Length: 251
Image (cartoon, rainbow, N blue to C red; front, side, top):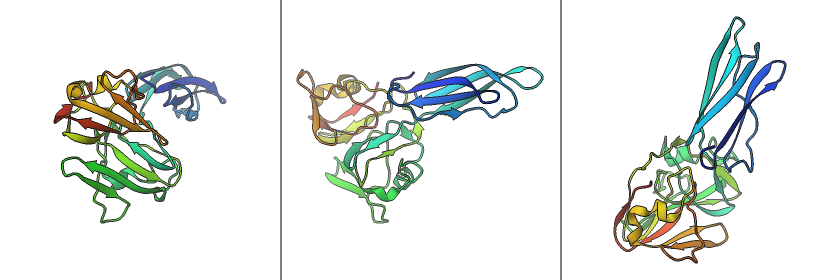
């Protein structure tokens, strides 16, 4: 396990002992489906093991090649899907995207439905200019990229999932500037953490933090025990009110 990401590997008899795997993004509450992760169908495999760090995982096993046992391996980088509501969802990229072009991110390959037409609008607020940037798939769209550290409003016609492929941010992560007033920020971690932890470098100047759940707002205020927002989570976007300019350095 790494945070809420879980990988399982095992050997299964399908004529020969073959190595299978399955993974979960939610701590094992749901699973994605079994996968055969080796292709040597003639000889059995044994003693499969797996290791995981952040979004990266590697499996190793012992397998007969007809003359002697050898060690084989396979690897995968897990990019958990982001849940999209039917209607509005505020999201952010939990990874540093491999390709930031919004037309590449909002593509058939990355959507669970496989249909980009289900995404009607994407908005993001530019605090510096005080203006909204938008995308609807047309060449005149003013929003051209999806980057880490920013929040985005996504309007979808149906409930869907979006997978953004990229690299997990380091620890500490990249710096993200925030300005006085309201900032639409992202959460660049594969593991949930408290606002106090994620916003530690700007904590003294934080006012309110809001998260849209799809039906209501959760909120956090530093030092307020009544706050309904207790954890920032991968894939979610947030509104942050700042009393001064600052720089978020994720831990």
